Image (cartoon, rainbow, N blue to C red; front, side):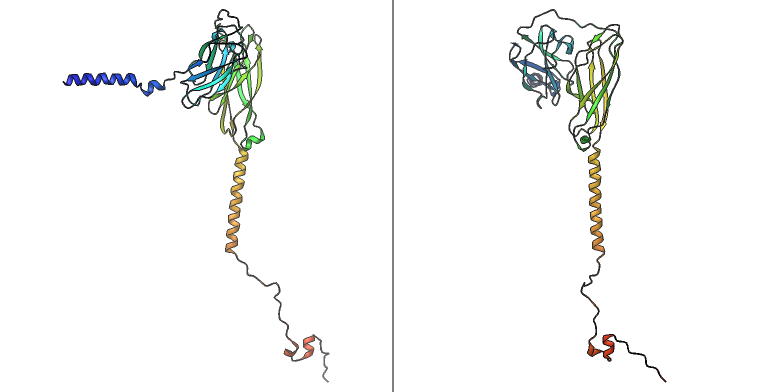
Length: 314
């Protein structure tokens, strides 16, 4: 009997484990996206639904050719959409269908800094030719980031809580013997770590051995206080390089206003305390010394103030 009970308990535990998976397994990121249609023509829209994405993350959706094998170089950056999933990690959003910069096979790609790798779903784009997949050409000499920094302090309204603005000064060097056409890269921003997608940046091309400095304006959120940072991956696959740059923002105007307000309150308290401690005596404005009447004076000459002539004694 005890053996039968033990077997029954073990079987029941196994069934519970299958019916109710543990929170650790459910917490593992199994993000996925589905499309409302498997094919569409440029100029129309499709609905993209996502599930299992990390909450409070930023997801970027874009249509890519070449099965997105070479990353952002195969994707249309201008029509991309940025969104934030719900607390449950889901979303549902329409995106425009466009012809990607490379031939199909075409896909809808979802990327996020919170994901280990991009997620792709096939999409047939009508009117776009299908070609062989171009593989990634790996180079032993990648694009080099000479320096990356955030400069500037403005605008003046940022001292009072408005959105601070900075300029990303990015210097790149092409150490190879061939020119590089730099595809658009995704610039991200944040506080301690850049995790919010800003926009796609066009850098053009770098000739062999060329070094060039780019100045890219960056606008942060309203009341962004403390550490500010930006980051990105620049270059083609195999020749890309990562960079980060940081700065600080302090609303000094609000700090000064707070100090002035405290000083005014303290001065008001001090003046009020002084008025309570020192009360001046009130003196009537019409109070005058009383003048005696003529009947109270022994000699009438004294009343009118006449001086008597001196009397000489002989």
